[in-house]
Amino acid sequence: MTQKKQTKEPDNTAVRTALWRALHVQVDAEPHILEDGIGLKLVAPPDGWQERPDMKYTRRLRASVVARARLIEDFVVKQNQQGIGQYVILGAGLDTFAQRKPKSVYPLQIFEIDQPDTLEWKEQRLNETGLDIPDDLHFVPVDFETSSWWEQLLTAGFDINQPAVVACTGVSLYLTEEAIVAMLEQLAGLVAGSRLIMSFYLPLELLDEEDQPMQQMAEKGAREAGTPMVSFFSPDKILSLAREAGFKEAKTLSTKDIEESYFANRTDDLMPASGEVFLIATTQTGKR
Image (tube, rainbow, N blue to C red; front, top):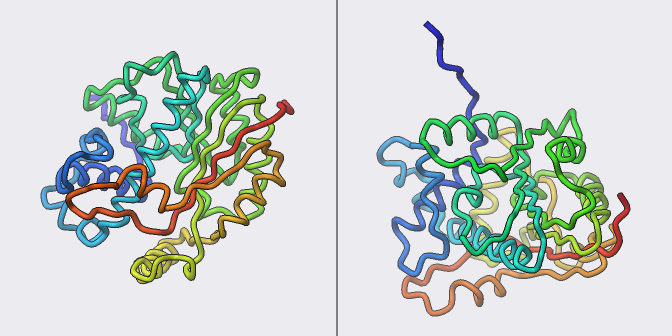
């Protein structure tokens, strides 16, 4: 009898993010910032998962995660409607935009880059649950310690002669400044008119006071798990890194900007944590 192929488990952070997105729909008031239950179907957690400490006591982090996802998806749809036909997700985790993308989206090639274990598990679960793996979705497994994500992206069919929108969230925190600079320089060389949207994290002293204890706990947990958080930047430093890397235009969005866009007039006082800053940058000349 043929045994079913076993895959390793996905990244814990990717699972937690998927469950936060699902929990938002279950417990937060309408209108929901993001409607995404696909990740929950993939993870299929045991009953009572909503009572886990990382679910029950992290409301502001949950709000940040769903707002981040909504911001990225709104940005991608807008860029696509303006003619960009390639979307690269650096650190895709259990992202489900490819399964949920609106009918208004024009032809869009989606490249999901992440660790091999996470993408292998995700592909298997999509097949097992009967969910769609569209022809325009390309999994790009990369062992970041031993191989080049750029080379793997090209192998997957990315067209260097066409503009792209690149999203990178939840990643910079775990990279050294040197690695971040190298990534920005690589992306700044994309063909003119390509767009980057990337999240960075503020140092502890720049967080709202109510978010500082949770951040300290998160940093402690990350160290103990062997994935320490190593990079925190002020908004000015983020802009400096982008401009030095060669981006033509660069700006940042703060938590206050996110609140104004997605949390105004809510009935449940849901608000995001104050730790994330988003860089939005545009390339000027292609170097490829």
